[in-house]
Amino acid sequence: MPWNLDALAVAIDDELIEIRFVALALPLPPIFRATEAALRAALEETRWKDARLRLVVTDIDAAALTHLVHESDAGA
Image (cartoon, rainbow, N blue to C red; front, side, top):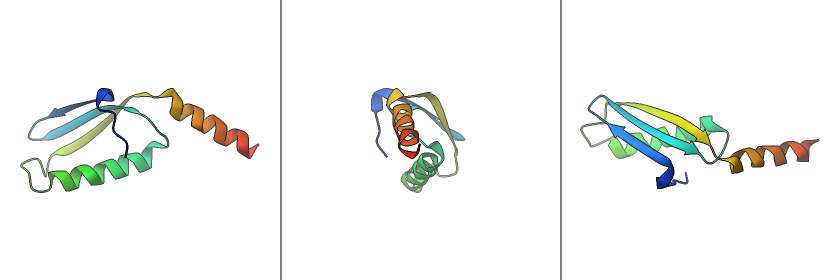
């Protein structure tokens, strides 16, 4: 998963880890699944291993939408 560190914010406490980000690609469900798996693996040996994860899309990059438009044009 590509990360643009300028486009995300992280808040962490013992019960909740919230990551706010700009989506650079679509569709979101596979991105959420991959992100959750990576975060769970990274947190496995930490005090936050049982914290809830909240992923918040604050915006969608225009390039992600342009990609969808081109795919629909190809199918028409």
